Amino acid sequence: MPARLPRRPDREAVLIAAAGLIGGLTLWFLGLRNNPPLLGLPKWLTLVALVVMCGAELLRRSAPLTAVAIGTLTICLDICTGSLIATIAMYTDLVYAAVLYGRPSVAWRIPRVCEVLTVLATLLALVIIREPEGLLIGFAFAVLLVAPAWTGVGIRRHRDAAHAARLEAERTALLAEMDRRQAVGAERARMARELHDMVANHLSAIAIHSTAALSIGDPRASEEALGVIRENSVQGLAEMRRLIGLLRHAGAEAEPAATPRLDGVDALLAHARTAVRDERFRFALCDERGPGPLPAPVELAAYRIVQESLTNAVKHAAPGPVTVRLTSAAGRPLVAEVTSAFGSGPTPRAPGSGAGLVGMSERVALLDGEFEAGPVDGPDGKRWRVRAELPVPEEGRGSL
Image 1 (cartoon, one colour):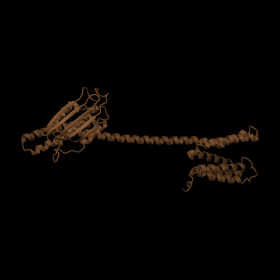
Image 2 (cartoon, one colour):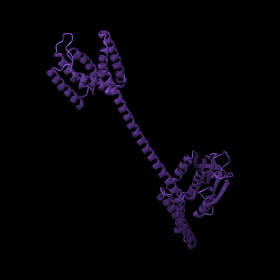
Image 3 (cartoon, rainbow, N blue to C red):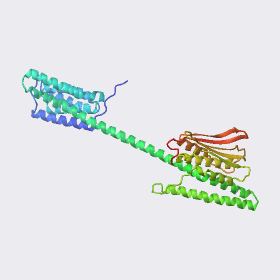
Image 4 (cartoon, rainbow, N blue to C red):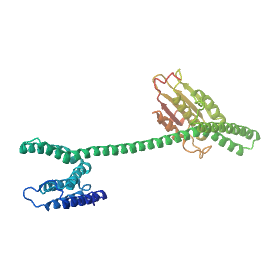
């Protein structure tokens, strides 16, 4: 794998290097050096150290660990050749930048290394000088190494904390947007189910009786069909107005709408009898529910499933018995079952959207129940059966 070259220095690094170079040259020409050269080294090596330190400054952001390594060797040369305050200041910046921009695995160790070097330098100075002034050398090392290192640690921690907070805020916003979309989708699905269940049976009856009124030449039969059409039109319009009122006052204080309950299944059967113009249809209810009311969500789901099943029977079933069976007992789920003769006609009596079975399965899924719909074999031939099993919590049975 080829080695990655450092990226170009940023504007901040160039400004620091330029300022350090100008400041160092000014101090050199003014003769403001910190100490005389050691070991007989020439004074001009101080300028070499200054230039190399400025070059290391250009790497403070792109390669901070390399820069601090070069800077460490350079600061040793600078101290031995007279030392310029500009070079020392740039080295402290390199230590700071190594902690702030370096790899975390290395950057967090730099302050500890600086502390160890400061302690060793202090002990060595005390051993060599044997005077309290040796502590000043330790203090100088602390200013040179420990202070910039821990300053970088503090700023890096604040930067990482701000980055983590920003990521958490973005994550929270994303989750809120997902929840909002799911809520909107669920509300749209609920509105579609309610609209379909409340209005579809009335429109189906209108379609069937309008077809009969157009195809039968008997004025009396046509008048009867028109009466049924008008009744279903009025009821459908009332249901639509109620739904529109609920939507308009969803955010305002409004009286809660009455929730349909299974006690109204008799009215559904009566409506189905008037909707289909065929005396061979026989509608029957077998109510085997136990005592006590059921939770409102369970009763509403069962009511809508029976309503949609009867609407489908009016549109698609062959002439014959249509049976609604409701069973429940303590500790057992509510079972709503609607059976009708399996239709074999070429076309339905009224057009449908195909959303009825989908809506019923969605209602059952919301209550963690089981749903099945399809043809089954019966004693009097093949029949179409819709069966929904709705769990009833024990705490919900017998309480309104």
